[in-house]
Length: 208
Image (cartoon, rainbow, N blue to C red; front, side):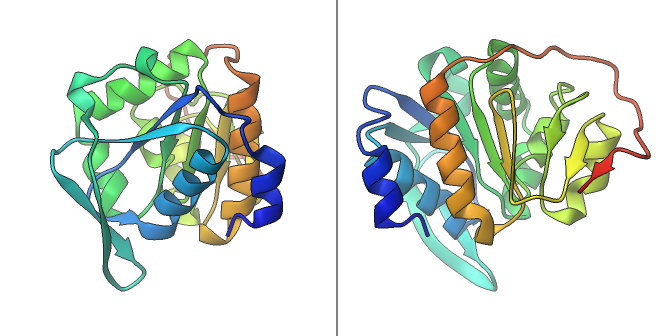
């Protein structure tokens, strides 16, 4: 968990910033609630954006977990409304999101604008559909590694990987490092935008 020491260091750093967390039913509980709490303690306004209205329910390892209210429909918002995007994991959550064109377009808007994106565990899966991972350095839960490589990304087995405002981590145990770098990148602001490129296979792009 993001501890009190980290909270004190980052307190107020994100004042005036507005962050979107894009998720739907089946998100990994800790990967949404802990980054949300860290961002809010740093002074940010955090909104839950989803492909459905009402509330969305977490998956907590072996069963359904907490629910959280949705603040905005992804079809009704734009990256220009926010300073950064967070993509929590959970197998079911990104599986639903990557089949939704509005969710894909929303993530793509952040990529091409150079605004920070934090994605953890299965969260980077949605970014495969944007066509903008070519040459990007990432990590993730191991089961989606091949999809990321096939999208042209370079995959590293590290607790957190940062590449020009794209922050990725592997699993819930990496959340403290993920939150630390996420806040740092949001403070820095916009980075160099990335553009769509043809998807190609990179068979030797696994890094350690």
